[in-house]
Length: 443
Image (cartoon, rainbow, N blue to C red; front, side, top):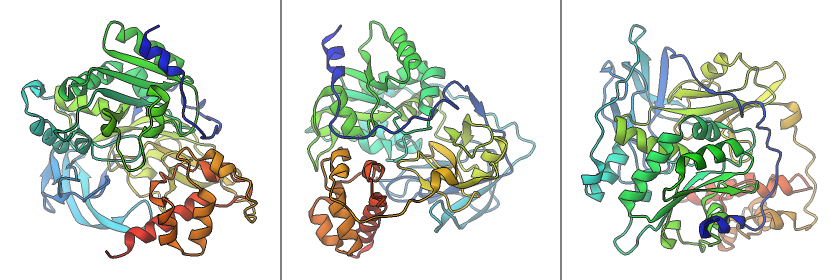
């Protein structure tokens, strides 16, 4: 056993252990969703500034063509998921119920929708600034759900250096198996993307962190990685292991201090989907126009792992899976811990959509909320050592600035506190309310 392998026995403090509920899709190969007639591409599919349209209504598009350029450095490009034409650029309903600017595309019913791979890009000869620009132009973001622009992570200040590339294959959210299937079905692309990042960033080694409920993925990757500078870390199951600071603690036994970033410790963290997207862009010239999505939950007629073009209406994805069972009461985009209920089935699949989960009343029934009994379970669950019950009390009293003084903004909204609370207090929802209120205030 190598020195690095011996470090994989570490874990992070606190956290929770929800049931996995992955059995329905864990062994299902990835299928491709048939192309539909209409696609909706919101301009703000990532953290940061929305993209700017570079197309006009009535314009013909080819699959993979850029339709919106980055609106600033903290922004990424958008590309057409299909060959077709622009039929509208205007406000459309978003997942949260609000209306946001989006580009609506009508697919050409006679097009093959086949995108021919382009010659590989000479990324090794590129200056780092050009490499970062290429990633931004490809529209690549964090595929684990946060949708943080990937090129921003690769913009390393001259005073810092990346020693370790850490690939997040933990997939600790219940129900989701899209990353698992990606590791099983496209391991070569995952390894290739990791090698590109290692060599371009000058990292001396890389680690792929995978929870031990995926033994087949661990064995497959280790078999392909023998003799390389990339290792696989088998990690005990715990939520939220996929949070980058928790993953760093579990793999390297190092803590990222509050207010600092992983790069301050010489570590860069990317989701497996993001790393595969890097390989697709630099080796095949394919931008981020589709992603793997898990459809599951007790309300889903036929659970599946699917390749879905971005902009596909959720309704069409569910229709391909046989629709929803009659007893379905809620559809969640993402995982059950950090995802959010969708306001309409007509909203589109986005770059950060890892799952579409259908739940019945048995899973969505809200228990009676009781007063906080100061039991401390939320404190024991919080992996960031915050005081969630205090945040909840202050949020209810609308004392948002006071909550901020207790490091409210360090909360990543993982939902561990709500999961652990015996009084059924919607702690994370109260925290989100407080943070949204603070962000909306004028400076």
